[in-house]
Image (cartoon, rainbow, N blue to C red; front, side, top):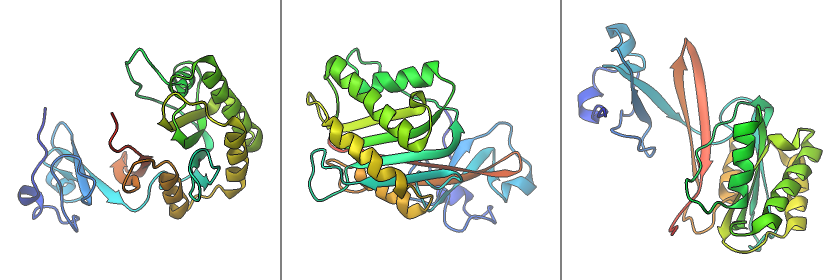
Length: 239
């Protein structure tokens, strides 16, 4: 609905911008913007809000950028050899969870598991990811493996199993080797760390056909406080 300001239009007026304001949400640059109504005053426009646009600063990091989040990775040999293929993201406190899910009639087991948690449970506190096998089109057995994964994480992290989200990516139609998954969970728990490097290792572990890791972190001022948002994703050449 609203077009973001161009780099040329808003680079000069903003005293706090050190690199550039970008059009759209191209995270290869160091700033992005969201439309805010009504427009802020002149004093605010030089410190993060330009002509009604709330400015988010791109900062270094990924899933561990925000305070209280830890991550770890492990080589569980789900499918790949000689590389990490499992990731764990853990919050030190329970989190309000939200999700965007496919509307396709065919949903992989982890999608159904996560929908139940997001829609029917008060919070989430951990995410267990594996690459190599997608646990899609695997029926009741595959869904049961989601529960076993969550149970394993709940035991080592001392959290509720229904607060553990599960994600799988890779080959469709194969069952995950659940013993290796559970071993991977046990390997990752003592390695949890809040460093940026730990977040990067988690982002690498979920890669399949990706040519590079994908992670991002941003900061924005809300109510006079600096809010940090971090994330990671994967996907390349998907059908």
